[in-house]
Structures are given as C-alpha cells and as structure tokens.
Image (cartoon, rainbow, N blue to C red; front, side, top):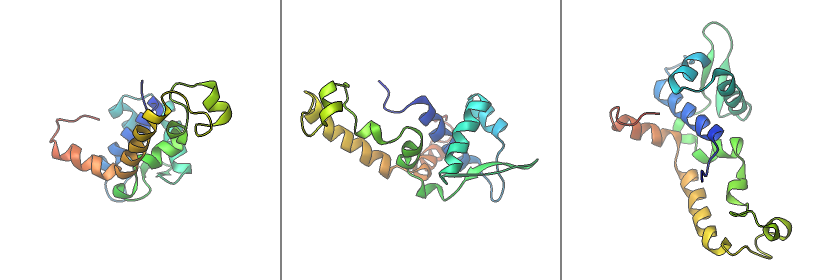
Length: 149
C-alpha cells in the first residue's frame, strides 16, 4: 500500500531536483528534468504546471525557459505538494473503505480500524507538514551521492 500516488512522488522528486540543481535566475527545462528523473515529459509537464498554478513552482517560456521553485525550498513542505496533487483525503478517508465511514463519517460510526489508524494518520500529517523540500535537499547533499532521486 502506498500512502502517496506515483504522481505525488514525481512532484516531490521534481521539487527536490529543482532545489538541488537550480541556479540563481536560471530555470531548468522540462526535457532535462524528465530525462534526469526518468519521467515521461508530457506527464511531468502536467504535474509541474499544476504546481505552477498553485504557486509552488514558477515557469518561464522561451529558449532559456523552464521551471524553478516559487519560494525558498525550506518554505515548501511535503504537505503543500500533497495537498495539490493527492488532496487531503489521504488523512480523512476510511483506511479500508467501509460504507459506514463514507456515509456517516468516522466520528459517527467508525470502522473497526479507525481508532488504531487515526494516530498514525495524524503522525503522517505532522511528518509531511514538518518535512520541507529544503530539509530533504540538505540530507541528500549530506549523503554525497549515496541517495538518488
């Protein structure tokens, strides 16, 4: 079971890639990002444009155009990206998809696993809120090439 969709993982990887490779006032082209991350260019383009619409990334057109982060990597949490790509249902839906949770809500008729999963869901939310693209970039740089994105 994956907590995050592949699309969301691609978005996070692209944000980390930009944080690691972006130079002042220079954007990185979509083809370069897609090739380096081994993600199909059209699919990655849609993901990045979605992040541009939500002001997590910026883009410029033209021969020297490309993508960059819209703000400091330390100000972009994983939760910011998850909110845009996967939405917040990850933290609110029934883990096993029972009808009673969908129809009446977790608090009215909780599923048999609800009370066990709620603290884990809260911990995941906190983790994604606290971890930033900047923190992940710093850890990757500290690993000196041992961690690939």
